[in-house]
Structures are given as C-alpha cells and as structure tokens.
Amino acid sequence: MASVTDALDPAALDPADMREQYRTAQFLESDLAAEPMDQFDRWFKEVAGSGVIHEPNAMIVSTASPDGRPSSRTVLLKHYDERGFVFFTNYGSRKGMELDTNPYVSLLFPWHPVARQVIVTGVASRVGRDETAAYFRTRPHGSQLSAWASEQSSVIASRAELLARFEELAARYPEGEQVPVPPHWGGFRIAPETVEFWQGHENRLHDRLRYVGQDASWRVERLSP
Image 1 (cartoon, one colour):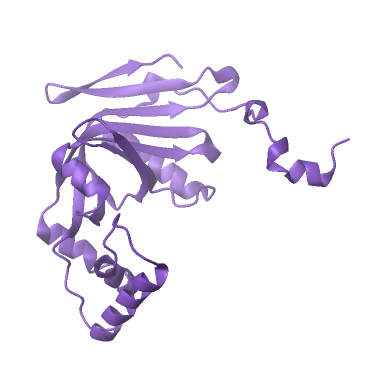
Image 2: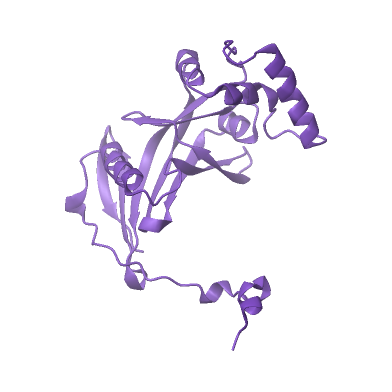
C-alpha cells in the first residue's frame, strides 16, 4: 500500500494516469448565438456567476516574434464588446513589442472546472489613449504606480530594486494624488477572426463549435475533437 509520503512524492506521480471524465450537456449548433461575441457574453456570464472559477477573465495570450518564435502568458481581460477583447500592458514588454511587429494573436480562456474553453484567433491593435486613460483611472493607486515602476519583461538585479522604484514613486505620488498615465502603457484590442467554443464530454468526444469570419459575417463549423 502506498504511504501518505508516497502520495505526496512528485516522483510517484505519473501524468499519464491523470484522467477525468467530463459529464456535461451536449452543446449544439442550435444553442449558439448569431454572433460570436454574444455567445462569449453568454458563457462568460455563466462562468462568472458559477462561483467556481478563480478570475474568469484570466486568459492565455499567445504572440509570436516576426520570425515565428511563440510566447505565452496569462493576462486579465478588461473589456469586451462587438469589436473584440481588450487587455492592458506595458508596450515595451515582450508581448507588446511582438504585437507591434506581428499583430496576429491567440487567446485562450481555460475554464477547466466547468469543462469549457474559448479559443480566439485575431489581430491586435492599440486602443486610443483616451480609452487607456479612462481605464487607468479605475486601477487601484498601487497598480497605477506599478505601471511606472516595472519595465515589464526587462532584466532586473533584484526584487529590492523593483521595490525601491515603487517606494520612490509612492513618495512622489501619495495616495489621493493623480498618477499620470505612462506613455509606454496602454491597451490592445483583439479583433477576432475565429472564435471556438469547446465543451468537454465523456470519452473525449468533446463539442467544438467555431465561428469563422467571412465577408463581414460569420459561419459556424463543427470540429472533430
């Protein structure tokens, strides 16, 4: 019999033995909204209202350099509407520079506890400075300061160096004083070209319904799991 110690030993864990049967209702073409962003709105509200997803607006953003080298990271969705999905970042970060030179991007919303995913491919563009400023003003004071303190993706000598920058800014802009919007910080909007809604099912017979943009309209196709 395996001991408690064995059960907690990473060496005793075999990823090949980790399986879960998804038991969910069928997801059919007749269930879809006419527009992908309307369908996203339905699922997002259901997931957010379920209370089982930590940060349902967390999404994996995948970009690529001009020579095709990919990179991924988790970013928080901050707005969505019929035009697409918006997040904010340092434009000098790796993702910011990659999107400026290669605007093609993929988004993944990994809602594992409810056996759902949304996968988006599209094209990124910077949002206007007015939109960036409006969002920046809603951020907590400390988050506003961190947008200045962190030269995102750059190498730093230590965490102490980062904290020193933050404390210097906190002294310059104390709580209650307006922090200017950094010129190197702002939003990207991802205009979707495809949006796939993935619903897990038992025996790995998942439902995958994908909207594909076509001449200012959308067609829906079912993908084999």
